[in-house]
Image (cartoon, rainbow, N blue to C red):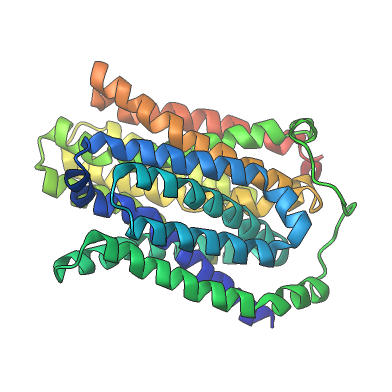
Length: 390
């Protein structure tokens, strides 16, 4: 039962990644059809992230109410409905409407699944599960590309993913008895089982909570800023063509995906905090490579190394939450961490866009370095303040 449920969760993580990259893949076809500027994709992204922040903050309350298995079923169903809505959209405003349930569904299932895995499974599985998310995020554009290449409308790509999500809903619903069995069989220590969800004020008062939120904010700010601006950095600094730079930019995400596959094995030897420190050191090496003025090849290696260093940090922050703050508080903490992550996604990459536009895109390595310094300092503060390290 333990292994069977783990397989279901692996499939769930692949499914989580499938729709995340669809908008970017389909947008070049969508915006001319609807007669909107290319920049309007950012508005949809902000709406999705806003919904995700809200549902992440509510995840503790929802999980207390119906349990992680049912939260996953409901959230994936809402996501499937939203994707189906995208596939039937005939105007830009309809995309904005369906972005709301998509964001709400994505945040709850992300927080619920991450907390469940953190409580019941080893750190290596957390890394491999997030590697599976990368697989899903990589496959999504190929599904959209297939639909377009055979002469179908972009809506068909969304419809295919919606069907896959509905199949997943059926699988997770059928697996609900397994969630209860694993809960009963696993020796999950609850320091003080809570009947009520924690309020934001109570969460913020937990030692180390604000620091881990800022740490998560910085991590996602660094990851998204590097992923979003790597191609532009290569074009504007080294004069590469857009096509070549785009392929090089994807190497950052390949670095993350391969890195998470490897991190799962390394995590068998190192604990979460050592893995986080190792990731920070590797990112630092990558940033140093980006500073070296010896051609785009060195910068490309640096971008790949930064992606490789990012690999263990996100899953290890999540996995360490029950040990740091207590298993009874982990769902609430993971919820606010998810919310902080999406705030980092919303705020920091566009902020660098302003810097690049008004000063220089060449400041990307310095921008990443400053974020890394703050993140590393917050990790040090978390180690000082949390219950696991006193």
